[in-house]
Length: 181
Image (tube, rainbow, N blue to C red; front, side, top):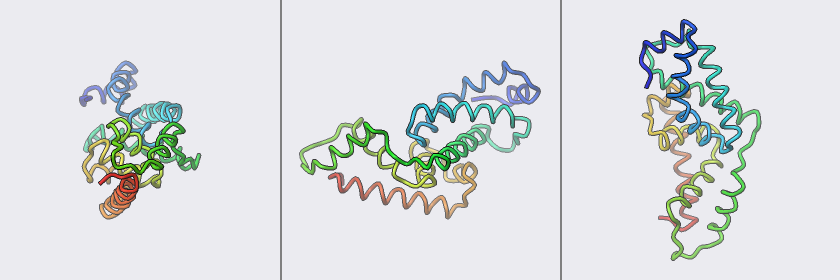
């Protein structure tokens, strides 16, 4: 990841240092945005907005926090704003079709391959509320600790725990309906 010297260079307006930040975090930011927004074009827009915000706000970055957590916070808030503006919680069409196909097939002999299961879970997470999806994504898909999720989202421990619990419950129930134990 990025060392403190590069951050200081960015705070002084060094664009080449900022380019190294973009190169280091671009995949991570895109991954989070795509998982939260479930739309490639929207995710690309969120990535661009994230790095614009990072550039504009880097002088106010507080070194007592991990830089990665600070970047996570920015991308998550931008994604939440996009979700609120669009009020779009529909799954991607190809995932919806795949979900419907497997929901109709109750045969216990039918086993989904990992790629198909990921698609089903992605569809299910897409039906969660934005807060539940955000917490689920950060903890289970990005492997962040609850304390980091609290910093990123501004939620307290109980709110993170509650949203995660509701998300897990919903996904487990839906997977059982699809024949998974």
